[in-house]
Amino acid sequence: MKFLSRSEEFVLLAVLYLQEEAYGVAIRDRLRKMTGQSWAFGAVFVTLNRLEKKRMLDSRLADPSPRRGGKSKRIYSLTLDGHEELAKIRKVQETAWKSTAEVCLPK
Image (tube, rainbow, N blue to C red; front, top):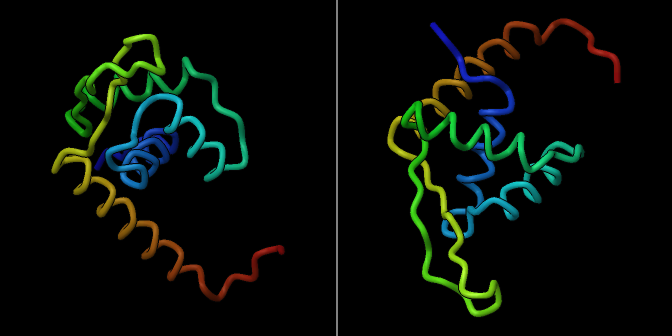
């Protein structure tokens, strides 16, 4: 069984959260809020491209915006495979955490 990387998981979760507002800058901002860490634009876009190649994400260009000087945003959305992968990861993580319930973790 092959799992996604942690950064791929976080990017999928950010896209899921943002829905129709899932474009580069918004995804990067959401990742910072989720993780408390700053993310380089390059790292975000490399991960987005990798997830598209794995068919976990789709993307489309939105209508051009006058605020952006006529440039279109690339909007990302989860595919069925992306949703299924997140569900699989969540189930595995919950099982793993339950199996260690007796272990005292430092606070």
